Amino acid sequence: MTHHHVIIIGSGPAGLTAAIYAARANLHPVVLEGEPSSTSDQPGGQLMLTTDVENFPGFPDGIMGPELMQKFREQAMRFGAEFLTEKVTAVDFSERPFKVNVRSTQYTADAVIVSTGAQSLMLGLEAESRLLGYGLSTCATCDGFFFRGHEIAVVGGGDSAVEEATFLTKFADKVLLIHRRDSLRASKIMQDRALSNPKIEFLWNTVVEDLLGDTKLEGAVVRNLLTDELTTLPVTGLFVAIGHRPNTDLFKGVLDMEDNGYLVTQPGTSYTNIPGVFACGDVQDHIYRQAITAAGSGCMAAIDCERWLESQR
Image (cartoon, rainbow, N blue to C red):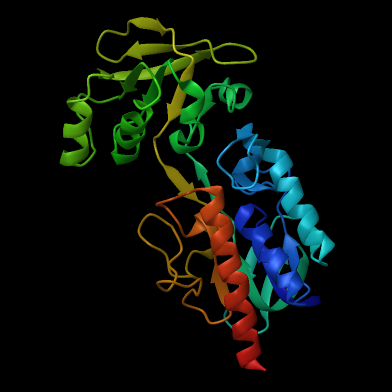
């Protein structure tokens, strides 16, 4: 058993920012950053799966996602944060010190910051891993700018998909909205906006069967569910917007969650329902889901944590 002032679970922009601030506050944080083989909580978070990041302040020429996360990590280490490339397998927050297990090894902490993030739901195609960041995206706000003058597609039928399709019409010449049903699930106002947008074309009762291209997206093969007819769409960009899943399985029955699985924090803070346990980043944010907002909430969590520890002493 190893005891620490603060344990941070997760190492995306939120967790690494929390580590920077906690380390500078002499809290000697330990970051359990996840395992490289894990799709849900790999070290560095979702930015490890992106290429160019052009909307993070301070990088006017853009920066590669993995490089940005490496800089975050190096900055945290510079101030004394410790990193363990391990995946947490169980937690016990029923009493203090809190217990965090990595298989048969148990760590204890005075406070815990949860920053396990979320993952985009994908289509389950073999080509997705190869083309993610190379024409295939899960974030229109992040990548829409790269598709000026292109013909692109969005997969989904809920608010997120319709919002992404509408946003992308600012850049693309044409946006195909691919939906497996014959009507949208999005709210009425979002539907009306999309249906009246001349740049959006709808492909109803349609699913994506395959993605074409070796090093970049060159097209998408779709199947009509009513006729079984296959069609190749000459799109250079495809945005998957079928939902996100927060990485909160560890905390079921332990921390308060919304119906969609996101952790609940007190308004304007990173406090969870358990004093001494804080949450930041995409694990508690299903609205913005940006690197910069995740980093900001990581700063909040570290400051909340520092002040709470001080109050306990």
